[in-house]
Length: 63
Image (cartoon, rainbow, N blue to C red; front, top):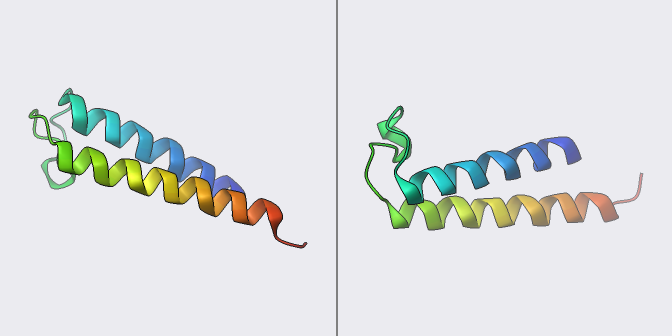
């Protein structure tokens, strides 16, 4: 599960950058229509932070 948390963190960070800059217009459902979407970028950044927290809690979990 730790690997999944790290993968999700990377994906959400990339989505946040893409949504903030508007460089991708491939998937309009995710907010990627070529325009700058600050709300989507903030949402993806929050999801990235939550994924990091999930990773951190998984690291402290007993085996």
